[in-house]
Image (tube, rainbow, N blue to C red; front, side, top):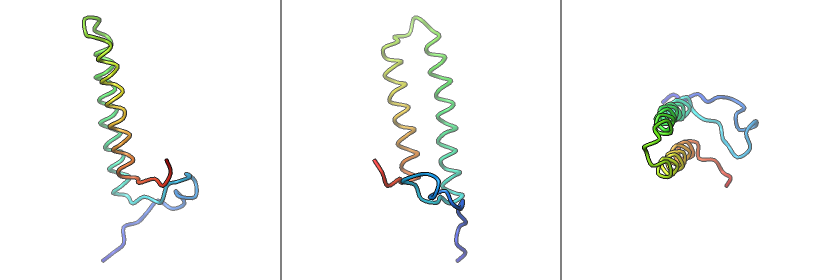
Length: 80
């Protein structure tokens, strides 16, 4: 079975990260693409004063945490 190529030297450049496969990088970029769409949704929600902005803020925070958790799940960094 052929080994999946990695982006070389990534682990040398980012403390706590290992070299990632192309599939892992593609998955992270997919998560980040969804994050960009969610950012547009939050921006829209911020533009509607009738929406409860406190809950918009809560939604924004939780969505950001979810995107970060998704990236960390794929990248599996060694640090805190």
